[in-house]
Length: 417
View 1: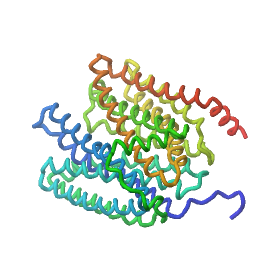
View 2: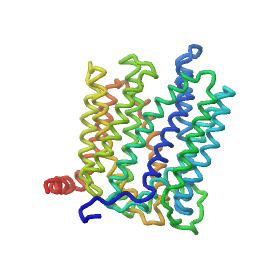
View 3: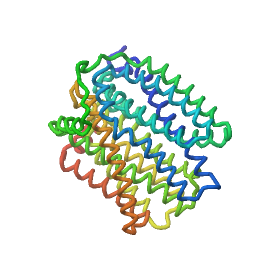
């Protein structure tokens, strides 16, 4: 290898990437496999459909609030690779249970399967994010996170399409959809075995049954590191804005463009693909660094795009383009933040910190859902709610610019070299 040749990705990196892609795909495929038939039902009124979709999303989210600290503890107490392998083995059982629930046509069992997949993702997330700085050098951390986020959002898009396609193509034979997802989980288990072996960070770590106390303790660890503390709240703000945009997008598409839930996939894809491409671009622009200067740029793009989304009389094509731009900005915004959250904690606290970060992400998601209802009750239009999203993103960008005034000029100077 010559001195100027690029450093190859470490052994097992692509196994981790595919395992994450498969998990994101299967999560969304199962959720929409269950939700789409209910939304398409002619025997249920709109209120019942919305309630079911809300319950499905809530049951996927609740495990993150209840078990995020468990996932963080496991990621520190055991080898993160072992945790991921165990989670993937459990996913096979969950998908077989989902196949049974689909065969029985019992909505309560189907919702239970979605909840179990939420538990699966809760345990997987801290190990997945925590292992990145253990298998990648710092010079490749931003690029690695860009690839991870890109594949995650591609998995979300394809999983959403697959869920709808399976619901229509295998109507009355839904059990086979569950069996296929179980087979895909087995492939995920196989690829997870190829993830690089890493030792347990803190084999003697004891589990704290006091969830709130554990989160408070982990937040105290983050507060002691200024960059880590700010990145934590930047991550929470990102999930708040992303969730508020997604909720408002579904309502806007239905009420303004008069699109059915199954016809909104293109708009959702524009947003998700934008985030994925922005994440990949952030990794390349970072040039082997954690590039703080990208955060204000990303926030500015999110703010500008959100303003466009709320423009009166906007066409569907322009709206989709604005969603893509918002997603692109979101990717530039979140990749440096995720890299800081992975790089700054000590080896013994990486899993715990990721657990707390995951918990706060879902707090941001829950607050976004409440905010949507409150803003609608205050008689804001859907377009004006998009402006609120842009205002929050803009404030985040201003905060970063003021707290790190040299970040952007230094980044631009490096680009000129």
